[in-house]
Image (cartoon, rainbow, N blue to C red; front, top):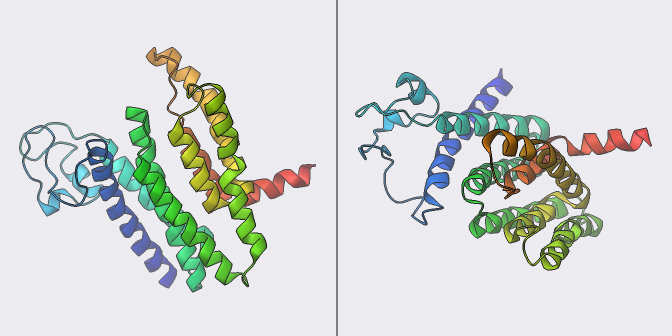
Length: 261
């Protein structure tokens, strides 16, 4: 019963953060404040009341339309909110809350996932990964290393694992960037894999990169065919999915693979 109540609180918290993520997705590319200014309808510009901002439920209650002008509201809003909430629950289910270090790690991983959601949508739309998001992930990485260092008997081996993770994929991508004069990979992708590598460690960041490459190789050609897209690839969303999968299930995937050898 207590566990169910805790998961419910985590879900609600995740939904609320998910609502804020939608604000970030809209305002960050415009370089406007994400904390100042009330939410408003994108069509009629009318300010939204608090009861129009309840994650997921307001969208359902309003039948996906603005209360005043009846313009359709993007399905992105409830999807982002629900996805963030459900992933928060999954993170706490996998990493727990039974100790102070585990709580810190779970919260850090939840914030990482939220950052990746914002990054993915913005990169998908603009082909740009905002530097502020990578800085935020860097801070999360430093916190993760510090918490693990303190919680694991001041293990220098653990610190080295995460330190190597910073360079494990990003150094390879930097070589590609230099060799192709910036045409083969974006600078934002290099920074993303560096800061995410610091947070995850070298094994998981390599797995993340592998998953991201496989997804991009499968999905992007299909999108090019169906939507008549050019060859420009927003790699951030694929890398973000890879990072998320590795974060949630990477250790089990690596263990399974090693047993097959």
